[in-house]
Image 1: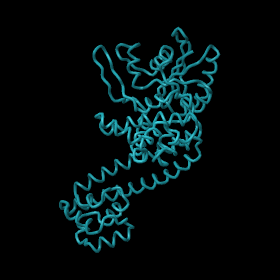
Image 2: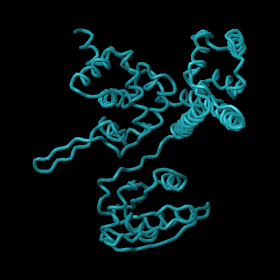
Image 3: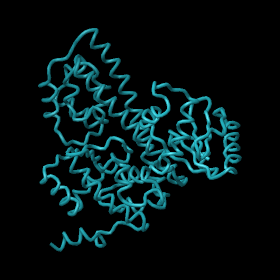
Image 4: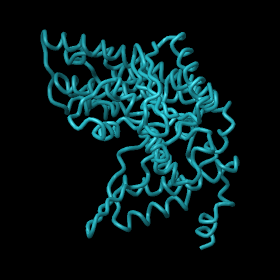
Length: 399
């Protein structure tokens, strides 16, 4: 029996087909506790008629968790592929929830051997993934708000955006709170700026004279009513930025705590220059289900570290892999870029890639793919990374 479930906010359409593709059962279940119990009951009755496979587009959520907890295997049908699959059954491009659940069921029957099976994750991995992904989302919001704040400052007071390197730093936010307009900083002298830096705990990497020179060298700001209105917007963004920074720091502590409780933490924290946050990002997306990745290239393809080859006749093209877990790719490439500063082997892999004509992002992906093979072996053996056991690193050191 092959079951397709079209996920929706309020109700889910369910369709079950047999091995010949004939529709055997249909149902509509609400997205509620009783509805999920009803769905599991349907799956239990249908499973008595043969082996049961469930096809669904959504890879996570309480619906998916409930099906996995009940012990039924789930095959993931990528959303971007559903548009092509629908053309098999509706040439005109018609779409409905009732039709999509049948398409999901029949695709599971015909193409199930090509689809990725969702494996249940441990409680520690799900907890770590929750805090890591939320932290990453808040970091993206901080970056977007910083760009918006910088654009606002450039529009009416370029000097405030130029005096410090990062507009989302504590010292810059404190400066904007104290001097939100060009008029408020008109009488700012080197001595006053030095006193302000001391009170706010500035690190002192740039002297007050140099910072004041940056402020004075920038174009003059806007004065009058517009400046006061712009100051109100800047104060509002500063308050939001401070809240984001506090939340990110709180989640940093939560990430480190959950990472310490994970049984595979030692594998990722032992990698050179992985740190705590980056190691947690890799582990959260990598997961802990060994059966999901029978070989190292499975992880590399999931993380978008391998290119895609298109070959037809005399034409052959190798292109960037867009369909992947982008969070895993970001975590792996960040680690790979940092590792070349601590591992001679990683630095040599990166150098050879650049020597072949690869640009920096491409060379980092090549290094990340090489690291994926090393991490996969350590992960399968449940042992920390040891450069003395890394054969390629030993050969390079001997040479």
